[in-house]
Image (cartoon, rainbow, N blue to C red; front, top):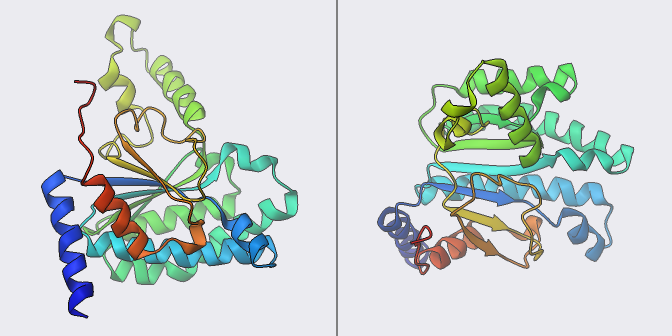
Amino acid sequence: MIAVENNIETVKNIVKETNLKHIAIIMDGNRRWAKEHLLPSAMGHKKGVDALKNVVKGAHKFDVKYLTLYAFSTENWNRNQDEVDFLMGLLASTIKNELNELHQNDVKLRFIGNIKGLNADLQKILADAENTTKNNKGVNLQIAINYGARDELVHAVRRILEDGISANDVDESVLQSYLYTNEIPDPDLLIRTGGEMRVSNYLLWQIAYAEIYITKKYWPEFNEEELGLSIEEFGKRQRRYGG
């Protein structure tokens, strides 16, 4: 127990000393994990929900204020329809089943992406969850659903034009104010599970200066300990911001 507590304090100190505020995660490998364990893909996705819960708890223990998770991309609609339907149902049931515990643990939920592209029932579940947790002061948990970074940028530009902002008045701060993440800081650390070496159309604007950590662990295998290891690696990096 003492060793575990000491490790938590070590990671917390890294978070504080490096001013690590925001971690974004590409949760990859559910299906590959299931295949290696001779299980249907659905079991991998269900196991991935357990990993999500563990990581949120880890973020709280390590004093990470913002956590953004890539749950469903704009490209994921191209998957088998049965899998898409299962994922939408799993998302709805998970939010309903976990909302009370998240609320009790002071987690503030936000959902980013083209939420209007989801079915009406799911939109209501997401809106209710946001409303229930809107005044919470703990971990700020953003879940990206029907999200694609290119789509986000197109959406931002369209809104800028609709608002009549002239071309000469558009700068980085204006564009950033129209992004889904306009109320939170950019990620300091981007984690990708599953070993793939790409960012998959995720937060392309926001991760301009994020440190990237790739682990071969599949998402169902990722837990509080793995989160701590990624933060420890982050603590070894020298962030130059192009300087």
